Length: 251
Image 1 (cartoon, helix red, strand yellow):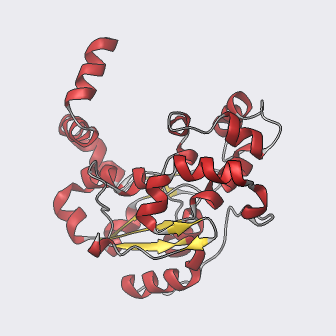
Image 2 (cartoon, helix red, strand yellow; image 1 turned 45 degrees about the vertical axis):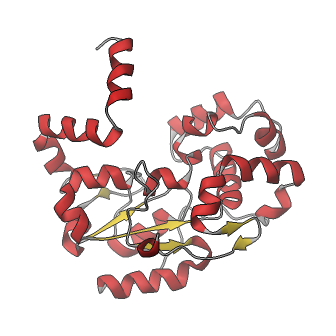
């Protein structure tokens, strides 16, 4: 498929439709996704617990997903979107499974993602990407003012807006329960009760440091507010915290 045909194909068909068409041609591959275990030196990845517990966890980058998934299920999480899962599991299972995700203050999440990638990220791919795209900036302020815009945030999953992971093309939230990073312990307990799992949150992959608000000035605060405006409005955030929690059932 040449470049022009590929672009035409993408412009005519939605991402979800294209993924369904791909699934129709690769059914065995999609069946295996639900059962296979992928080993890594940092732990094993698997979706097996989702069928076991009749649930789906949508892991948004830099929102405590590694801690949540390993504490609940014993496996590392993938970064599939809700749309991906709706195709992987099919609409019937997707609709009846309990779907949840954790969101995070966009200003805090961006600062965490920047520091995480600058420190090397998850693997060599992250490290090389940071060296190519981020190392030219002396500090976080220069990164925000010199790189952050609506186009660049699509270049790495750690900078994607959170609604990319959770919403359909009409910005409808597709999960049943929206948990918040800022209230992780309470929300984790709620999820445990819903899934009838006896577990405690074990914080992994954390990036400790100063209060994210100290990393911002008026200029960078405003820029991030503009670039992540949809997340801020959809999930009820202000720069300083949560203005209101979003209930997907009322969205």
